[in-house]
Image 1 (tube, rainbow, N blue to C red):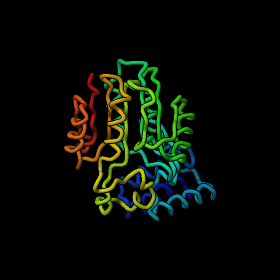
Image 2: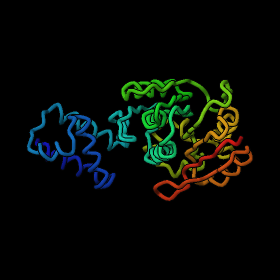
Image 3: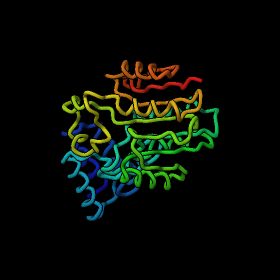
Image 4: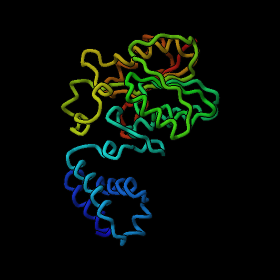
Amino acid sequence: MKLKDKISDIRSTLSSCIGERESYWISRDIFEDVMRYSEVDILLKGDEVLSDFVESKIDGIVARLLNGEPLQYVLGWARFAGNRFEVTRDTLIPRPETQELVDLIISQYSSSKDLKVIDIGTGSGCIAISLARGLKFSQVEALDISQGALEVAQRNSSRLKTKVKFTQGDALNMNVTQPNYYDIIVSNPPYIADKERDEMEPTVLDYEPSTALFVPDDDPLKFYTAIAKWGIGALKNKGKIYFEINPIYATEMIGMMRELNYEEVLVTKDMYGRDRFLSATKGE
């Protein structure tokens, strides 16, 4: 089968279950993964006849997608901040909203250097590694409770040539070993309440690690509160803390941060107009 016919076949097969636009982007990613072809290559090499091996590999990918498995887990990587990050079932799939958080931090510290930064609940390492690449001469650390996630993050860091220091630890039980040390704390912790499960897509519920997604209905801010309390001792005076948050708890988040005497507590909307990011400053 010719390449252009295989592309058409993929899009026709997938469009009925995920939509025409999404099937277009997925077909592009499949060929990038299997043949290392760019969009331009796909256009220029449409008459190329695919080998049986390539066709079989593509058919296997499509079959897994039709079974509901997320493309990123099928291919083993996801795009984030202009780079490819390895992802596995030990890590969440990086979201565009999280890239907005990274962009926000980098834009606010564009003229700074030699910052000390820690990412708590790093997963694939996408936040920590992107900050290490985007903040001048910064020392970046990252923590996660999952050894599997840390192994993925370390591989991503090595491949993208950053020197992030990865540590295994529990965000709910951290000790301040370096008082007044960090300029920036950033975290995208579990924040989806159990009551929201019914609203989640099966591709998320069935494949992504639930411990990185959900919090109990009776204590939805548990991670934020623990990290913010730790930040009181760990941040430098005028250091900043950044969270990706659940929009339905934005008001509660503001109240909690103010009760802990954080200043300049600000909630910022994401590209979809939802209250998605909170930043605050440690007072002197």
